[in-house]
Amino acid sequence: MMPRLLHLLEPTVDPQADRVVAQIRRGLASSFDIEVRYITQQPSSADRHYSSAVAAILDLRRHPPEIDIVHAWGDRSLRAAAFAAGGSVLVYTPSEEFGRSSVRWLRATAQHRELHVMAPSATIQRICIERGLAPERCHLIRPGVDFARIQSKRNAELRGKLGLEPEDVVLLPMGPSTLAADHRLAVWAAGILHVLDQRYKCLLWGEGGRADSMGAFARQLRMPTFFRDAQKKLGRALQFEDLLPAADVLLLTATKPITPCFIPVAMASALPIVGVVSPTASEMLEDRHSALFAARPLPRLLAQRVMELSADPTLQWRIADTARAEAYQLFSQSRFLEQASAFYHGLLLPANRAASA
Image (cartoon, rainbow, N blue to C red):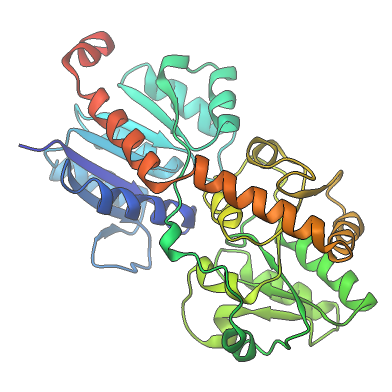
């Protein structure tokens, strides 16, 4: 019988986890019996869902599944799993709301249960260890990129549907609009650039809990032609990769540790990246080597770096090409799946189970 693996997710808290779990589900289906359940009030798939963490705890206690490993993505998922997952091994991957309260919960859970952290970045791994978790329980497995989904060639038809002109310089903030992503900084910088040169436009994906507030902020700037929410403009759901052929520059504005799923995607896109210095960004990108960084998270400094990039086509090509090469070298989907498979199988080895008992 194959090992049984349950993923418990909170898509409204961490929209990036869903795509990582989808990779695991496809790539490890021959090695694990995989089930996915969601904690959400608005189910978006046929998978089982719970309206709250309490509902998840009650159901999992009432009808405990025969599961070897429960992988909790986010804090509420971890609490539900810790209270209800019986003798299963627990794995936790932080969401972008990861903070001191998360670490307190991790330490408390680890005292009574076998708990491992699958950290998507060295920054998050280091935070867990510095705040008291055992190093041997904190495992670094960086996300992988499905390179087949990335189109680097500009799509004039898509740009036209988005109301963009051929000469426009389109700035695309990276990933979903969350608190940690700080897309307000990106929209503000794009507004400054639009005042200087109306060819500069801001294109927002439209995913994430802060997407609507970004649209409201853009309207406050009273420049109706410079901002587009892609999903609202096209009237349909999109993947972030779908927008890469419409963009000219990618903006990375998160200053706090983030789940880095979209940084490797951006690197693989062959588009130049302009961002602000942060632990997660510095872990994957290098200033003037694979990206261009503003020293501080200020809109005018970010705008200046975009202008510097626009004035130097050689620099554009060099940092984009370097980032793309490093993405293919470091963030392949096959590498991620191999590491994830070895990690899950390792948790079930008799020697490891005995050592943690």
